Amino acid sequence: MLTKTIAILIGLLAGLPAVQAEVRGSASVPATDANVLRGLSAYNWVCKPDYMGSTVNGASLSVKFEKTRRVELRVDMEHIKSMTPSHSPVIAWSVNGGAFQTLQLNADEKAVLLSAEVADPLIDLYVKGFSPYGDRYNGDVPPNSIKITGFTVDEGGFTTTVKLPDKVWLNIGDSIMSGDGAAYAEKQGRPKEDMWAASDDGRASYGYLLARHYGYRESRIATGGYGWGGGMANMPALKRLIDQRTSTATRLKDGALSPVPDVVLINLGENGVPPDSPVIDALGKLRSRVGQTTKIIVMIPVSGKGRIQFTRALNSYKTSAKDEHVYLVDLGPIKYATCDGQHPVAAGHKAIYEAALPAFDAILGTK
Figure (tube, rainbow, N blue to C red):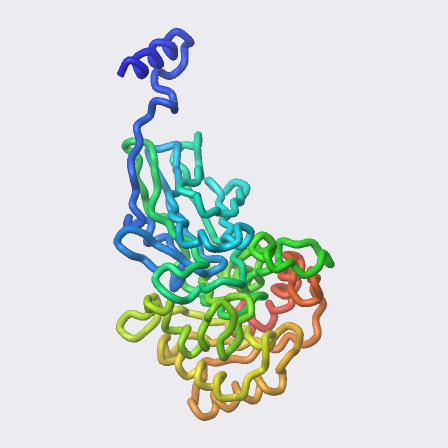
């Protein structure tokens, strides 16, 4: 009490506001706060009574705070203690639409200062990078994931809802869709095993750019080394992954994805061309989990890999299922900048996005 009184007297003598930042009280906003939950990207977060967690590069949250200048993100990273520090997830955030700040989390991280002296900050946060190595599937909190327990704000601070697009666009893919390597420079080279997380930028992804262009809210199921039949980080085949956030947490509500996406874009095959059956089975499962009018778009890998096989599998599914709302996009040979001959850098993703617009305009209509 004496310290606060002295601070007030000093402030009055200096002609400054009586109560300075260092004497503010604090309050807690739990991870279960309704406005926080409304601001989460769909299908990406495991939400429990005392935390939320994700293993998805590009997973995001948007929340507006009022009556506060200070916002701290509270995290619990005990589950990554066995990981190499450079494999740890990377987050990025902006305050009131300003420049993004980036931080690679570490095992001892407890709190991240998101905003210090901005009144009523709107926080836009996303997972910028994940290592493709390390289990991202088993358990509520897989070893390679982030875990958020809430926020600390000034006393009296509270959250409000951020207006986000009503329509949802789900991207399904591999390291290219994920944005792995996108933060590197052209021809910089393939990231070393322990540098993948720092090389990523989830929002550089052409899939994210397409969703934003057409006015959708983007969500994603994409990891490095993934294919129709499964892949690295213990990820199961797409037929199963459609249903599961992790091995213990479902994406479904009443047998359907919740919310039901308006558009699903799938671009898989760079990590191996499977027989027709895993493709056909996954498309059938996906259709059973979305609306009958949801547009499902299968895109041939931008390298052209598996063009004949994927075209055949999609046509076989479309004919047998009599599905009028599944589409094939084949961009043909295009040029795009990469870091290693395979993974697009940010400029490469933009080139893919621009090349794809005519095909997507034909399916979705021009914006």
